[in-house]
Image (cartoon, rainbow, N blue to C red; front, side, top):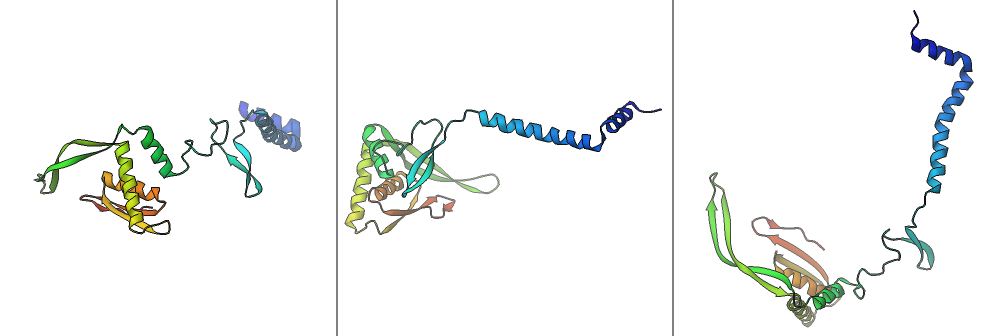
Length: 195
């Protein structure tokens, strides 16, 4: 007795021959490809690149899809990190910016497995405003110039994680001095230099 599937398959092959089968396979592959090209071509796509002149040659600048025009600087009037910091400090000069806590005491606690841990008791936060931090960064920048640093010199900041390293870093930005800093984390050692 013949299976139903075998008789159907045999009748399809007998009626159309090998050219008919090859034609059906080609149509089955080409029709979806052609339709996808046509449908993708009709899709209304926003222009993501804008033609610009780069060094006298034509080029394309890619922009964010949410922005209708090219953005030269993210904040008007702030073309450098130092200018952005200055602008933020002037805008929020009386608001709290950096908070530090004074060390009251330091205890060493032994855990049940014998490991020793350092337990710090810290005081309340003492806050500096944006304006105060900006003044300190400007004073640091002036000190660098007084010591003879200029654009061609480099400065390395080696510090634990604290407010002063951020102030020093901003002072270096203000004088356009290349800065390399090492962050030192207590009990974990210091990091590799970051630039």
